[in-house]
Length: 608
Image (cartoon, rainbow, N blue to C red; front, side, top):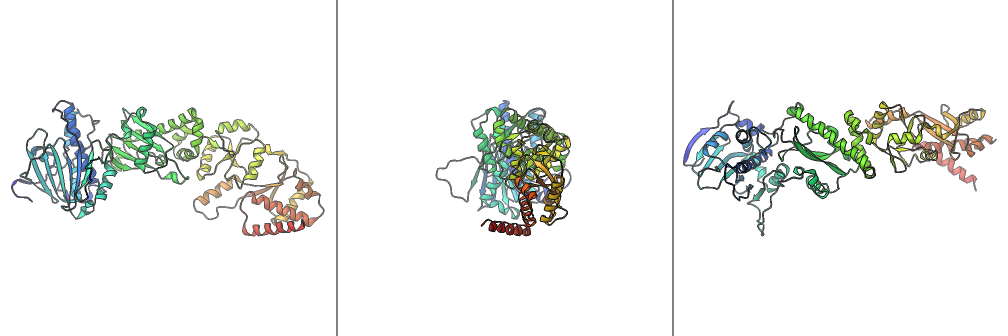
């Protein structure tokens, strides 16, 4: 302690002496101390500006500011402001007694209890977060009406002293932290910049950082580290697309342009603002990593608070500023807050309204964005039935030809020709033969090539009698000429069971409208979905799929096979047709491929 002591005392606490608790447990992250001190400094300036606007004091031309100064040689970190300052009595009231809040006193006196004034602080503990990293803290302050500079210092045990001030200072407050063992990492300029950028990038008063240990810039020009007027504070009608893109790049360090944004400016009774971006995603797994930052009066609070943002919208990126939440918000508070629940519901509505509006008013652009949007929409629909009900009218499906339609448009296109079945493909390459057959019959084929697609269509099937079938699961009525069986059908069944080496092979003979296709393989939709789901959850091999070989009696090769008297030739041809049918539906096993190649080479030899 310094000499010339005027008065000594011990910190007064309403319950018990809690300094050891403060040092270890006040916040889960030590770095929050800097947020608290800078927030207090911003409050001090905001209070003074408010008094000026009310005519309580004469306003001057002061450039209001907060300074954060690092002095590695002295092992100090200082937070300074030129705001309202304190008298000695105010220091005794607000600093010497934990759990009193100068912010609340000020609000009650000058704002009539209105909490929408921009004052950040709510609790009296914020200042004491300094002791999480400091062994000693000194406060040098001068009140806006007082000509006396007050100097107060306190050690890590809570023992304080008012001391004679060595020099007078201008109005405002310096808080000097003498960093101890717990605070050595904050002697790094890079660390201070990192914390300031994280928590203070949008605080409402200009903040400047100086490192006495670094080389000084020759031009001497100062630039605040924060943006005091963040974009979310603007009226949406006044913000430009360029500003939205620049803000996204700055905040999220993503140089890919977002798809679009939703600017929320909710007034009474919710009172919160924000911007949510739909990011450009590289894959369906990319979309699972979003980032929604929660702010309180422009002060960063946390990332991805699930109680404020619905879990399925955490795939988005954005910022929300909720001034009616406490700065030191707890998980239990969020879980039980009616205000939070209303915010969440409002966000869901705004997202759904945006997508519905784009679908109705700019469908061409909506279709261009759909490949990136559909994962958000489908996943959100699966997680939240209310969201699904709001958005289902704007869900479109890509066809294998690259165009888009809704389910209602699909139904209108096929009429009754498909027995109330919507057909889809998952792989346009391996399923090309099937796609060709459906397209020749003028039946649209949807492209559902993401894992979430299958889960989403299951949701739609719960609400409608129409069912979804992959194109290799069924031969649509519109692809067939007839189903009359005859003796030749029985003959074909015997030939192909023998050629395939599977006497239990399920077969069906039909007449397809496309005569170029000798055979296709169908697999059970229900079993295939179950198998895919088991594989997705890591169950090796899934479950076997029941398959049926569909033979086309309209095909010339099949007709010749029936008419031939050469039994060996029949077996070779039937075996080759079977292998080609397998190949058009899935990858051949090693044994199947070996046999297919051998038969193919043998057939080529006969041509010479």
